Image (cartoon, rainbow, N blue to C red; front, side):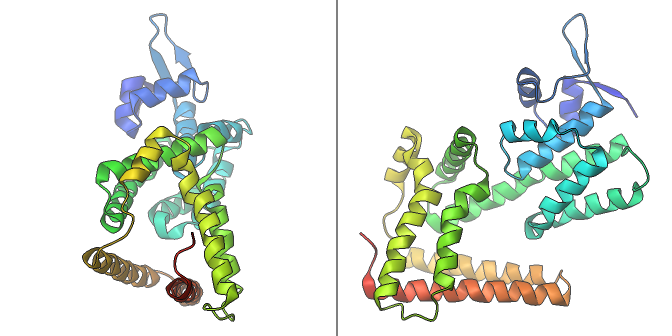
Length: 292
C-alpha cells in the first residue's frame, strides 16, 4: 500500500474531487504534508486520516468553518472515530452501515493509536455514499412537491449556502419547527377546533418561516424558486402525496425490523406521537383554514 498520493490519485482513491482538495488546501483546512519544488501536492497517511474526518463531519451537516474548529482540537484518530460514532448513533436510520464500520474498527484497534490506511479510505468511501442518500432525498422531495429535480437541487443548494453564511447546522435550521411540533404534542389534549388550534396554526406559520422559507427569501435564486412552487395541490397530486406517505410507512416498518425489540418499541412510540400531532393539526386546519 502506498504511503503518499498526488492530488489526482487521492481524488480517484476517495471520491473527493480535485477541486475540493484544492479548496481545502487554500483555506488551510487540509494542507498536503509535502509540496514539491514543481508545486505538486503530496498527501501522507496522516493527511488521509484528516480527510476522512472532513468528509465525515461534512456529511453530518457541519460547515467548513466548524469542521476546521473541530480539527484544531487535534483529537486522536480513535477519539475522532468515537465522536463520529456518537453523532451517527443519533442518525442510525440514515447511516446504519457506516456506524457498523466504525464500531468494527474501534473494537479491533482499541489498544492501538492508528487505524490502517486501507480502513480509513474505506470509511471515506462509506461517508461519500451519502451522496446516493441525497439523490434519493431529491427524488422523494421532487415526487411529493412536484418540483423539478433541478429546482429541488437548487432548493437544497440555497439552504446549504444559507447555513454556511449563518454558521448553522441542519439541526439549527430545523429548531423552530421542532419546537413547534413539541408545543403541539403538549397540547394534544386540547380541542383542535378551539382557540388553541387557531393559535397552533399561527405558530406553524412562524416556525415554517424560520425553518424553511427564510433561506429561500434570503437570495434572489430562492425567491425565484418560491415563485415556481405550487400554491395548492390537485386531487391527483394529493393522491400521489398519500402514496408517498404510505411508501414511507412501509420503509419505516422495514427499518424497525432491523432493531432490537426494546428500541423498536421506542421508535414505534415516536412514530405514533408524530402521527397524532399530524392528525391534530389537520383537524385544526380543516376547521380554521390556513393561517393568513
